[in-house]
Length: 117
Image 1 (cartoon, helix red, strand yellow):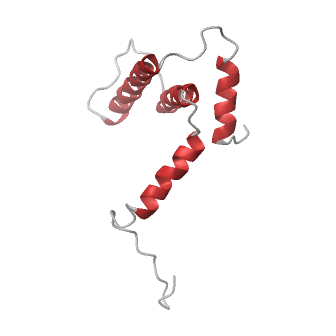
Image 2 (cartoon, rainbow, N blue to C red; image 1 turned 90 degrees about the horizontal axis):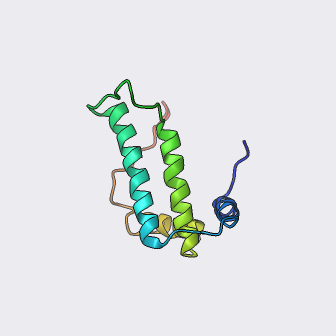
Image 3 (tube, helix red, strand yellow; image 1 turned 90 degrees about the vertical axis):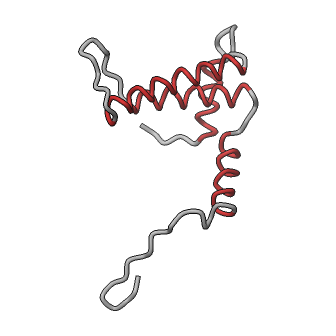
């Protein structure tokens, strides 16, 4: 499987959605859909790491599949609002690297026997 950029993923989703008359859902419907998918991801996390094991009758989903669903809906949401997710990502990383740069405890580099990194 080839690696795709975020722009390529957004374009791929747009080409898929563009073949249907209905097009993208409204922002409120998109948010509801994202909430639904996030709920499904939450359920999987709870099954794997929480106190609620799956019932024998529940189908096997994976967190990878559920994260894929969340990502697809997020891309649809961004596309419907003409938001470039790469730019959004770059802005949030800049924020973390500037405003929040001293917020967390950094891991100190390990030194070798000579005291060098």
